[in-house]
Amino acid sequence: MQIEQKEMRRALYFLLIVPLLLACSPSKRYIRIDGYAQGGTYCVKLCIDSVSVAPEEIRDSVEAILHRIDTTLSGYNKGSLLSRLNRGETVQTTPMLREMYALAYQWFEASGGALDFAAGPLYDAWGFGFREGRLPSPDTVASILSTCGMKHLAPELPEGEVTLPEGLSLNFNAIAQGYTCDKVAAYLYSIGVKDMLVDIGEIWCDGHNPAGKPWSVGIDRPFDRPTDGTDSAGEDLDGIWSSEGAAVGIVTSGNYRKYYVKDGKKYAHTIDPRSGYPVEHQLLSASVTSRRSSADADALATLCMVLGPVEAKALILSMDGVEAYLISSDGEGGMTEWASPGFTLKEN
Image (tube, rainbow, N blue to C red; front, side):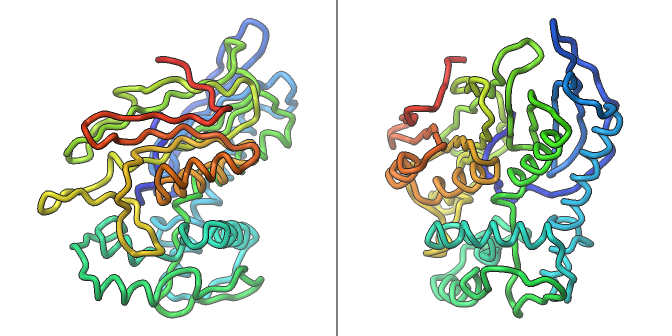
């Protein structure tokens, strides 16, 4: 499973769902729905024993949720509400757009600006956004910082028509996949599903798998060496995380796949929107679980990668219902791992 930070790569779009598959279980009936979304594949597994809805209807409803997210929140779908808003058009807001915006603003405030969903020009300047970029000068960074960011926006989008201030744009990639997991999971709960795994790049799971065991997820072992960033996920696992049957979201963010090296210096794809520069700490990956939502796990994993290992540890330990597993470079070619008390990781 690829569970790393957005890397500004996550398109929200929906293609055709492949045929529904029935899974065998000694005592329970499971179905599996596969398809394409979020710039990659997705998979939903669920037990239908307590559900009166037909499998085909469940598939169609999942498809409808993904399609609605695509046409509302995708920065890659040029016809989405978000894309139109970012082009300077006046759009009619919807409940989903307002909900996502409010969630983003809450995290912007809670993080002290370390998560900023209107900092896209900084990623563009450093080459990690939707456009190619070169190393910006300090004057360029200062100029961009003065004009972009959620500090220029209100905490909520109003109902009705809205236009963004000139020069500002929004990008919800840091929480979009987690948010999508939550929306699909909410639908499954509404029809009586108790055992589920929703994997849309990020994960929400509850209960047990077809084998009657808690859901488990492989955690990639990061690398800390100059590469072109093309190494595949899942080639080397650091361990296997177990949900222990709980309802929980899990997300991994990382700096080790998306970066470039110029003049012998490594520039990570994580930008600190407070300074305008790529982070320079030793944290390579952060796997975060949240009992509240996948969107929260998504946001926290990204936030850990901005803060670095020391601040990230303190943050995780201060929060209820949140656990984390942090992997850092030791600066000498090795790695160090840290797990919060409730993070269950087994050897691969």
